[in-house]
Amino acid sequence: MKQTPSTIIIKFGGTSVATKEAVLAIVAIVKRYRKSRPVVVVSALRGVTEGLLALAKCQKSGVRRRILALHKMHQELASDLFSSEKDLAEVMAYVDAQLAITEKVARKGRFSHETMDKLVSAGEIISSFIISHALVVHGIDSRQVISTEIVSTDDNFIQAEFEPRKTEKNARKILYPLIRSNIIPVVTGFLGSTKDGRITTLGRGGSDYSASIIGRSLDAKEIQIWTDVDGIFTADPRVVKNARIIEDISYREASEMAAFGAKVLHPRTIRPAVEKNIPVRVLNTFNLNAQGTLVSPRSTGIGLKAIAFKKSVVLVNVYSDTMLFSRGFLARMFEIFARHQISIDLVSVSEVSVSVTLDNVGHLDGAIKELQTFSKVSVHKDSFGMISLIGEGIASAQDIMMDVSAQFSKHRIPLRMISMGASDINISLVIPSGDVARAANMVHDNFLEN
Ligand code: ASP
Ligand code: MG
Picture 1 (tube, protein in one colour):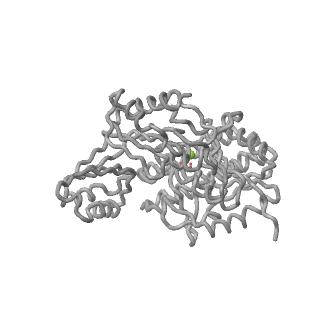
Picture 2: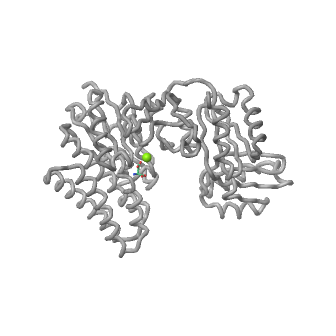
Picture 3: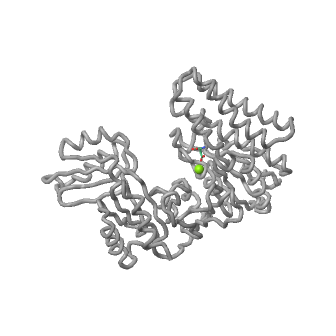
């Protein structure tokens, strides 16, 4: 049997493929990692996925104008990037051929999730062609690879899940020969296909997940996510002024951050990497000297590492002074939420009431109606937000809960709900929406400044 070549995955997000400056950085990065035999994964140009999705919502008469706008976005990049007439013409012919397919789909109307995925796929199909062509122009042998040939998924359109065995087989069959011949594959992020060959997508922001899926399938040495910030911050720097870059973070901590509102990595990114113990590195395309954040299989120490928050969460209170502790009450309540496709974040139970915050509101109205047949229900849609303190061993860290609640009471921020989670990695506090930013800064100043 032939030896499997070792490789790394380097994935570039929408801003990293949108300008000449960014694409030249990609060329430099590929050159820098050439010896590690990278597989490149790309998103659509910034704003293109939105532009494509908008086609499904606009009047038929608006389709032409929007297609022209998409044409222009790509043309601007291509004409900055390719100085020879011939290259430019070749790239724009490809762009226009793809957009012609898109336009046809858009004109048909009737937008099922399946049609949406077909429509939106043009973004990554075009960007991968442009990036691959740019590498070739800069002397790097490269080939575009469309991931519908690799990532095999279920038929849950717009939110598909990959099938590991088939995907692994495809990835190896298609990518290993290129890697062995020193040809850099530039693979579309976000896209997959069903067993019978219909295009699917992995959910918004899913290119990170694609990178991880492909890394897993090839047993990559590392998965690099190149974005437009220096790495994963201790808290969102747009809100928390003293936020700083975390050098090392564990898989579990990074997943928890993504799930509880931090926006650096797509929440599903870590899982495929975990299965093969592959380190994930978050890096900045626009600052090649920053060392980034390493997300690693190892634990990186105990205690508070980062703060995530959601400015608003939906809070549902269910009261029943007679029923609550009767057998099966909670089961009945959760069954109703599940049936209405509502998933729950936090739960707290008192003598006469249950409070839950929702991760996704599903068909909330229907659920409420059913709950009201045996309990009193109140729903708060914009009043509350949530702040999550994240770090391995946090809940058992000495006195942290006491110190945190002392801080909140000192700053007069009322705690509506507290949840420590069973996994000892997250303490989440539900507080008034208007206090979230202040609370995040306060917790950061008190517990994350050295
Ligand atoms: N282009 C897709 C989106 O915006 C996937 C990605 O960029 O990760 O959702
Ligand atoms: Mg992204």
